[in-house]
Length: 145
Image (cartoon, rainbow, N blue to C red; front, side, top):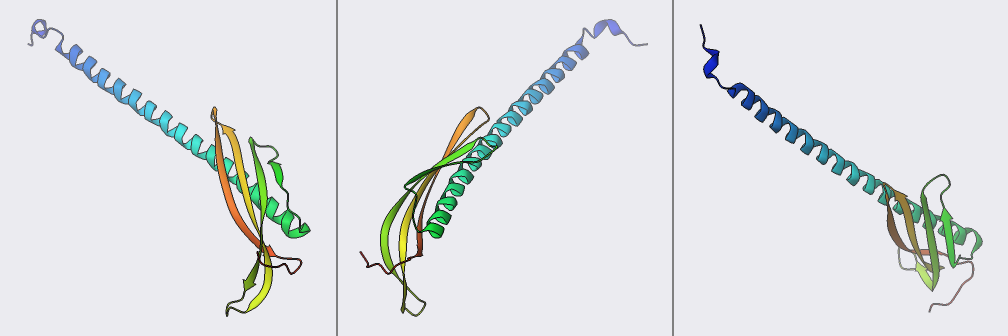
């Protein structure tokens, strides 16, 4: 027969230490998961801002191509979302466009489209800037500058 009087609670101490180790691992795991969630959410918010800026750039390019005029400034608001963008367009001038064999083919108007997108989410805001040079076929033959 075993003598239980001499054990003095060693099993209890070992059990409590194991429980403490498991608790620390659980808290560390939850903390890591929370950090990963914040990173993913911030990345999504930044992507939304970039997409808003690109959408505004594309809208301005379409307007220039269709009407031959360019908006000096424009604000694009994406319906049903937490994003917006502003764009400014500068006319850089006219240049000659050459074909593949360096023959003169046409004139192009060159524009610089600069857009800044803003998105909010996850308790913060993100900004993204897109600058794009665009060359479109000129409606009239302009002279090079």
